[in-house]
Length: 118
Image (cartoon, rainbow, N blue to C red; front, side):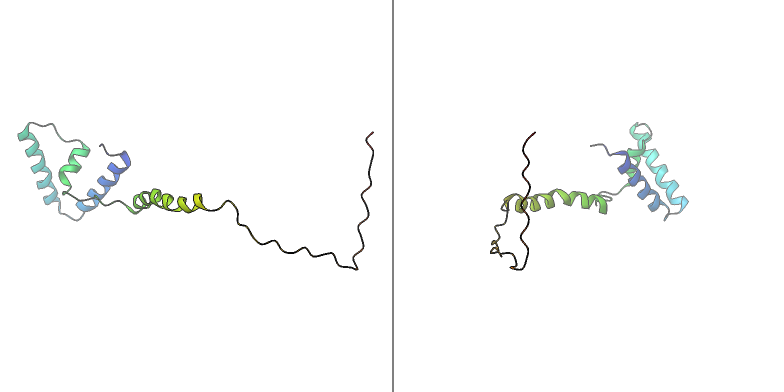
């Protein structure tokens, strides 16, 4: 499966950061060895994904970044939280408080005027 452009850029950035820790002589020998091996096989010069895969050790970079781990955890979390949301009762039957009559000193409300239709 081809890598997305963002993932390829992240892999390239990680390789660049690793290369910063090596001497220029080491990098030259490594790249020269890769070019000679490809020339002996009769293969054309590598493009960026082939170059990255040739340089990357097996199993390196397989860990997901934190944002991808969070995105990978969302569907199972949704499934777990959806079950109680679906199975809950549609309403909660609370006891009805007893009716309290109005205070005896309260004045009664005046009746509403009835109007006849025109």
